[in-house]
Image 1 (tube, protein in one colour):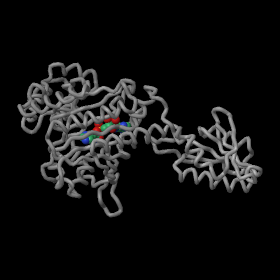
Image 2 (image 1 turned 180 degrees about the horizontal axis):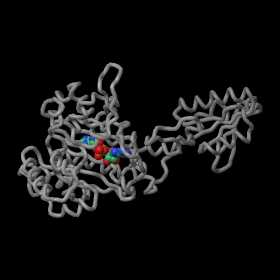
Image 3 (image 1 turned 90 degrees about the horizontal axis):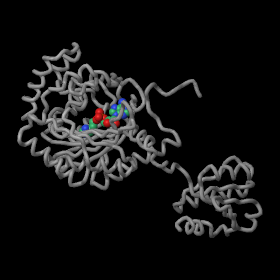
Length: 420
Ligand code: HAM
């Protein structure tokens, strides 16, 4: 250990665990590409106001959790506490919304929230984020939900559960909000929660404290206040999900920690993750573009926590993902042989074969130990005598059999063996 340790609460991945992280990220890239989503590479910091306005001044994320600082040019900068606002900012700035709609994009990277660290909750964590902009078709809601659902299945997760709700829109939400507020004002709540009732009453439905939950039994539900358009939208989303055999739990109290949501809202839970069981979530945000000064541009999307996804893979004992195991490992004895093995190993890589070698001019025994540890199927062993004969020893490490192969043929021989 050095004098330094990682800052409190960051998540980081080292081998062998990092292989699962990479697999989770790459599987998402493939799933997004398959569904026609293009990649965005975004900055990890933005103008603080983007989040204050976009995510919402009344949220914990903005009030308590942002990493905000003044840069040397006196600008207020914030490390992104989520990806959606920045993704939308970028789409608008680059005029992607002037082309064909919907604009379908995804991004991945670190996200920062100053939270109390615990298992599955970090101050720097990783999200994959996917957004579809410019369509109010409920089919796009169902597409994004199905994409996340199928992604978890493809990773090998079997126990992810989907929770669904709708939040209504500018048409029906105000009346619901008022009736919820009237109900909440009659409860026995502490002053912080009372303040929340005035600012963001829907969030109170999400309170996890038993003394609050106990009083919410008769709270009015949005489902009973939806306008006809929101109801039709939600019915269609559910119809399409049912057509895909995707099961969900209706959760009329589901609200999420960000202010921009309208209509469809969803969350993915994993039962083996304890307190931090939310492995992903998202929803529609038809007003966000205008909130950040853009044109009307409806949107829907989600963010999935890669850290929690990896924890879920471990909890479900999804078979270990192959790390950087190579297929072939070179062992050289003597200086001249080392020079040849170096060339051979690079040649194998150029031919698309994963190969590694021992370094440091070690003994045969140390070299073979390295070969075993590498996970390679074959070792290439080269001594001065082999070199003189123009051949190399090819050892099948599982079977223990060894044959001499002419140096000039070895790449082809290995190609054949590895593809059979
Ligand atoms: P979110 O629910 O705040 O949504 O975050 C998405 C996911 O990030 C969560 O479900 C969770 O898995 C993970 N996550 C959140 N906080 C932490 C943390 N402190 N440590 C580890 N993982 C965490 C959003 O961020 C929205 N931008 C999602 C979205 C996209 N909605 C529409 N489009």
